[in-house]
Amino acid sequence: MDDALRARFDAAPYAASLGLQLQGATPERVHLRLPYKDDNANPGRVLHGGVTASTIDAAGVLTGFVALGGAADWEIGTLDLSVSYLAAAIGEDIVATAEVLRRGKELVYSSIDVRTDGGKRIATGLSTVRGVAAGTRKEERQLAVAPTSAVLGNELMKGATAFVMSPFMARLDIAVEHAHGGAARLAMGCSDDKRDVDGAIHEGALAALIDSTGALAAWSVVGLDMRFKASTVGIHVNYHHRVPGAAVVAQARTLRRNNEIFLNEVAVTARDDGTRLATGSVTYRIVVP
Image (cartoon, rainbow, N blue to C red; front, side, top):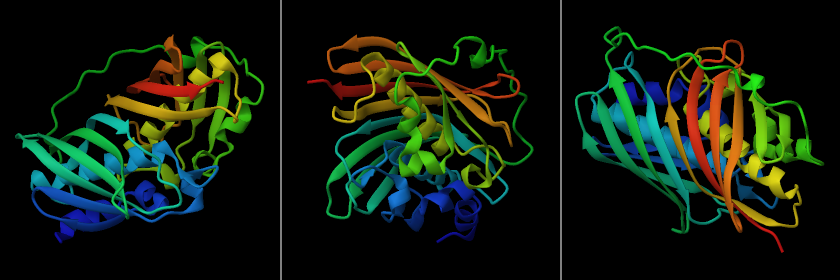
């Protein structure tokens, strides 16, 4: 295995906190394993959807790194991530296989297949990664975006704070600031165990936050009741900017409800200055008897 790839993998604290293991790589494929542990799970030992999204993101980034022939000092990150959840992994290890679909000068498009050790497919993802040699990235213009805190208040539906008490979300130290009437706001700090190699919050952790915020917005429509069956159907994330050391806020709104399906949009901004870091959509399902 290439030493530069191993160094890139080992340099991301968030991947280490999840327990991800790099098992192999070729110029066209990367294989990751995630052994089961309780603090990556929801109640009932069900793997949290954000962990699956994080694994898919990490696999896509590493595949892009290898495909572009990156060196240890390359600047590389996710531009676009799409995840579809197919089944639950319950108390099981998972394995992610990322395969290059197309490689350009700076962009690598990959598909990622995630299965349990027994071969059950639990998710599939598409990743677009951009990589450039250190110091060669051109100036990028940023759009001014109002802080999300200026939009929502601080209303909480009954039981809202319990939503982030699952082992995985508790480990990410996610706090509920608003959850009412089809809207939600969650906050997350930038502790060491959530950082990528440049000190910014790892894109996988942002995907997990987007997944959770969209889900909570949907729950705020019907009321939080753990007797209802619920799961994420799919998420899609665009990453816009990286701010090392920045705490973040994610704000979600439910745009449409079609019986048990809830369509939600999510924006993630830096807590201090409102810089837009990522935008996502979350399709969520709640079966209300």
